[in-house]
Length: 78
Image (tube, rainbow, N blue to C red; front, side):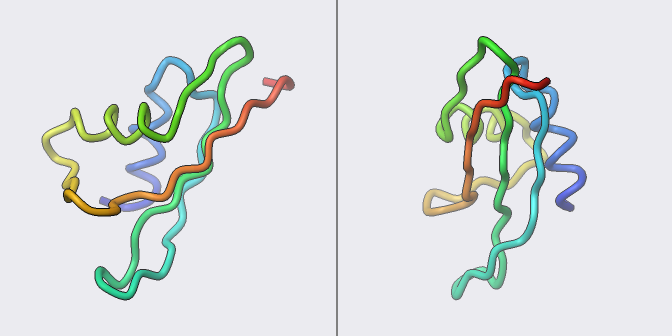
C-alpha cells in the first residue's frame, strides 16, 4: 500500500482533518509507514485508534509487532 493510499484510508476516519504519511527506515522491514495525523476541532484520536481503524480493512497488512508510527495532534484552524 502506497503512502497516498494509506493517507486516503486514514482520512476516512471521522476524527481526522488531515494526514501525511511518509516512509521511516526500519532495520527489519526496510521501511514502515509514519503518519502525522491532525484531528478535527473538538475530536480526539489516539495512535491506537488509528492503528485499529486501519487494521479493520482486509487489504491492509498489519503485523503483530511495530507496524506504523503514528503522531496525532490537534489543530484548531481546520
